[in-house]
Image (cartoon, rainbow, N blue to C red; front, side, top):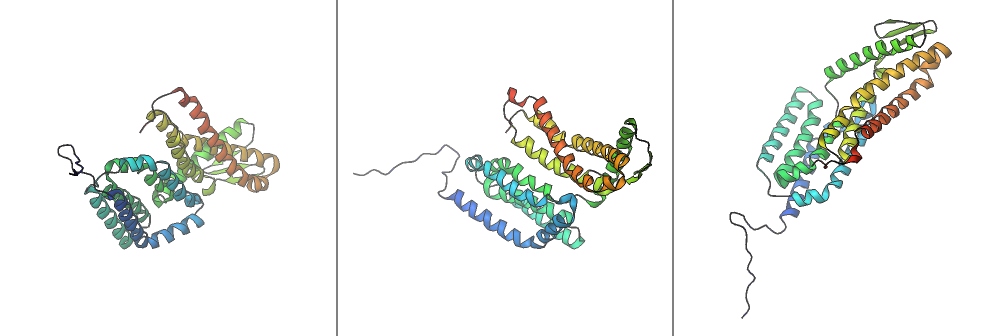
Length: 297
């Protein structure tokens, strides 16, 4: 007499449903596709921002990087998938409400942030809290493609320009270059250098913070060291821009203002970023990540 196979489950737990994981993937993908349609205008505006705003010219690189980060965590994510939580539906509703209010108010910035929040809600609803914790960085990394609030941009840019002009001119004066600073304008016998918005260092700061976050996430080591590595991106970008202004003053003093504002001006922007990135590598070495420490989850 044939006997049927008996399966047991732990008390209080339901047996897993076959194909539940695949069904959640397809349902999540469908919701994400519908969200892409709802946010179509936002994406078009965002693309235009990347093409026209130098501060966010790196933006189109962020989605592929975020996708790569999610791909790296695919095995951990699959192993962590569980029954979704209703909190995900609340997050989705809040994100869509924020999107609608942003459209009504004509505020583009918050539309993009609501999309990132929507993705978090989808992950919670269909894959559960554990899986969402695995994917949080890949999803959250998308914020680096979004513009900052305009009023914050203006405040940060002005203060960066003032700091660069003040400190950069002080270093140039220590080098023996005759100059007088007035606000963000540096006057020299060869002419005057005005620290405009492109020279504030904000563009490099935004890009380096995004790179620093990626660098810290991919580095194995204690969480506190990774936070320090990420935070180091800000002062490194500021210091590199100050050095750039001092060097521009030196070039203007020797070869004239036209030379400083020509090819060397554009080249020094790339050099600034490379110097700051090298600084990140040095900070990583000083933190002795290779020395051990359990990798943070």
